[in-house]
Image (cartoon, rainbow, N blue to C red; front, top):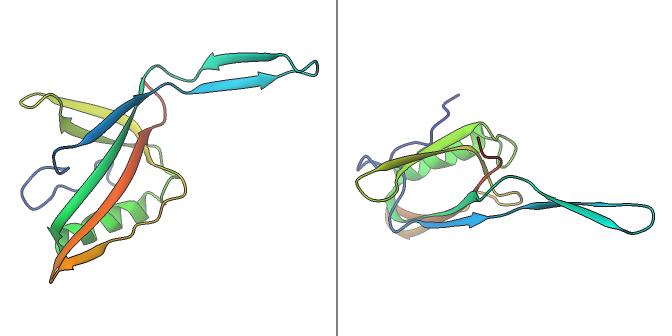
Length: 125
């Protein structure tokens, strides 16, 4: 199983501009006296919206197959390398597709597809 998403026909992994956010996740432990203890679950975990507009069927099929091979949100062992900032590459690891989403593509024109995938980092190194 490949740990990297498929490259598009043009050679890049994602279409730009790429929407990226940093999220701070918190776990909350609630005790019998209803007091709470909160702690961080990682520092600044990345989230992405990978949006693809009018890409050929072959690229859509590669991304669909990659999504299915990851079993949607259940596989957290893959990584993506993007230009961040342009001219310099950054690799984000421990990624998963956001829970609850399905792969849904819309044919915008004959043989050209559009879809969006939400991706999040599960933990930092």
